Length: 438
Ligand code: NAD
Image (cartoon, rainbow, N blue to C red; front, side, top):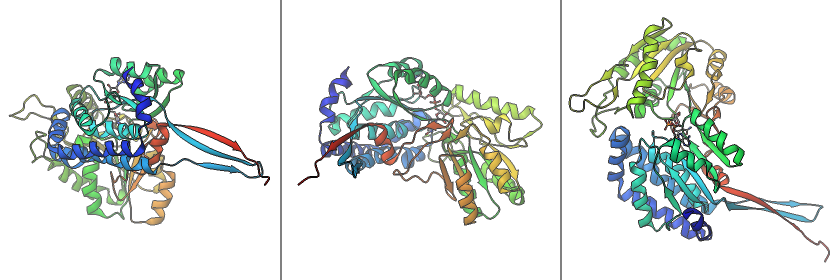
């Protein structure tokens, strides 16, 4: 195995050299921003202004962050007083590790794990989604120019059931870092767990957006438009269930419908549009099946959007108008299942307890967003929300040092900061007995 043969040399490469190569990769991505941006938008359907301002800058940030973070990473020591022993922990790279990622933020998410895995001294076999492989291909060229030795990062392309499966079941791959759907991860875990592989799983979500009457209304409204529909609602952190306090409900409903109806949907590489295309025909059909459900259910009311758009100049694209559906029952499919789309639900609530019960009544627990100016409420609710991330009066505000991940069926483990460097290293305790007599 090429990756295995490269491991000894890469893991013994000095920290400074590894850090320098990762910084070189970051520099080269910045120098080639336009090529990456265009490739990502064409492949995924996301508006080009989004690839240019979020996706690709974050790719170089991933490499730059871990180029520095690894030089600050440390391990613990424990002095056993009275026993005359000193324990210290070595953190060794694991060897060959696997990375499998989805299509929604293709290179952003792929490199979010590749960078720390390489920084920690591992060799990586990485598979991008078969739906969006282009920027991963461009990354290979960059890595070579940046001085990354051959065999250290191995990008493989193919279907999940074949190429992905081969990575998961290969006996020499020691750890799997997976980002994708909860159902896929069940399958991966069934294969990897009996082989005693280390697993990090970043999975689906059904994130609540909770709006109290005392919020900063304009900031909340502008941010809620983004948290609902950025990247066509295809970000794992998008808020797809909106709960609004009853006293504000009608005002919010009118204003939100008004603002959402004005969002412009169009070709991803035309800068004049707020939203681009849905990633694939299969995904569009899945979204439409939920919208059709709302059309026939008297407990659901489509307030706007949900129609397919046929662009004259690009009639074969998968375009959908952003959709708001008012629902009456928190247990309905639209509030319980991940749709991963420009479809959000809207529901009123009266009290903190009521909304907490509804929000936490979910199989998922990735993130939640809370809009209130009341500090006590913010502290109380943050304690009780069953999600790995709580945003208060903000959304997608990311500091790469913080732990990132979900509870319940949204994932296992945390990434970000040193958490992921711990994942990609094996701790080994060394205990030294010492003589106290002089
Ligand atoms: P998916 O699970 O269908 O595919 C993800 C990756 O797994 C792809 O590369 C695919 O080829 C691969 N795969 C599929 N079957 C496999 C198998 N048997 N063995 C190994 N690999 C296999 O997910 P998707 O549709 O690409 O992405 C959307 C999902 O990703 C949503 O559920 C979304 O919430 C989730 N997501 C989660 C996060 C997070 O950080 N929690 C971030 C982004 C996306």
